[in-house]
Length: 132
Length: 115
Length: 362
Image (cartoon, rainbow over all chains, first blue to last red; front, side, top):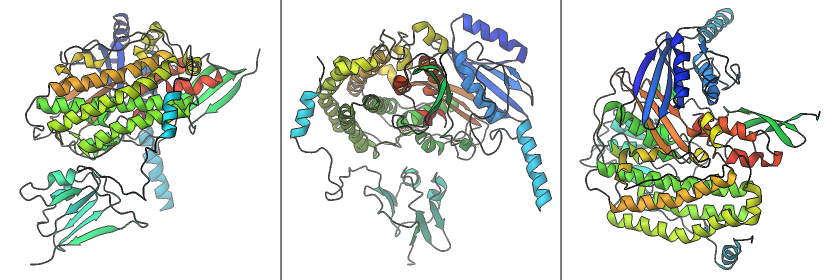
């Protein structure tokens, strides 16, 4: 079995890579986020027969990523999930739940460094300072 | 033609039920059924390896008070403790009978008697 | 222009095995648009990987879903073995395949029962589940549990099966075949069943490729893709393997594909038992995953292709473990098949993808 490939790309290379995978007939497999320090590492995987290709994209706080669901329509669920859990916004996703996909008690629970999580932490510590 | 299940349905009507009339008939356990964890307190050396291996946090071992406590309601019968107990003299075993039902949650403590 | 009404479907509904919400926009009993909503069973199990070390986490992956329980523990173990480059003994790999194929048999029998319940044929539902009990008895005799097996672990399997027990498994499965053929004939040839299944939820081959659907849902539209053809692990012992496909692209085809896959699973189990290698069943795993190591793995679960991703960071806790379940991938295709169908066929359309929502929203 060929070992799966992990390639790191930048934000402007993303659109070109997506169209080339679509033309060659690759199938979209996975889109998930991981917290890496202050940034979020987005992994996008494609498969074709036995080959698996993985793209790694490092995203800073507040940066918007162009939507994958415009080219691969079934990716809209993954984009909503990544926004709810990690705070990474995908621009132009075909069905946008705007943060209400998973109803969590804390905003972006898997990423404590996102903008929403830091706002929440600041507002809750203000409340404690006012009440206490 | 429709109604292909008529044969099996009539046979089911005439034969005795497939289910067991529990609790009037006793439950049938197999040899490997994971029922409850049993500890042989005579041989237990209170090393606490099972305490660290339990993924549900159901075991508490107190070396000074010489007790081994299990919370039967947290135990998920996964056998991680049984596998981690040092194999020379297997003190922890999995017995097939399920733990008896209870109305209140409580911890079950076993004390090691002093020799 | 006819008036449009919005009918909420779920999350509590007698036909759904798990909670799923759909907002159906209907026009005179025909569905025009369907907006899905999931997230009712989200337990945050992917965050728990930061708190349980990688050897204990296998007990949590088993409890993600009740039907695909063994599948997730198998996928997790194989992914971590690929991450840490551990060699699994061949007997353990063969035993894993036997339990996984039995898992597929019981899952398809469960689904056939639910499908019969969805169009009101309760007798057929009960007969399918009665047959499924024999597979659950095999599980209890070999591993100690009916649904949660606790049999797979990183490095091998926990229980061994003696040779006479293996022959006993073959006898039980062969005894099931006669009754199973009667049940399948009812699904395929009975006129009342055919009226409900034919022409319902059509997804053509081009649309299926565009949405990237997986598993029996895709194989019923003519796409012959199955991860078992790659021959990972114990599947390399098989002589030849051809995925089961059908061409009608509707609910009838999906029922046919899953029904025939049960026969195929029984044949696979018999072949593996014949070719069973000798040896140990567990390799001891020392150390922790290296920092910066990544691994991906694919597995063919009863519902389709499941994709796993693991990343290590040098400690005994994994940094990230991602499970992408087949239902998450098929939801897009399901929403597309709902457009244009009758209101009474909505539960059937939802069930034909074999939804396992609790896996999707770990």
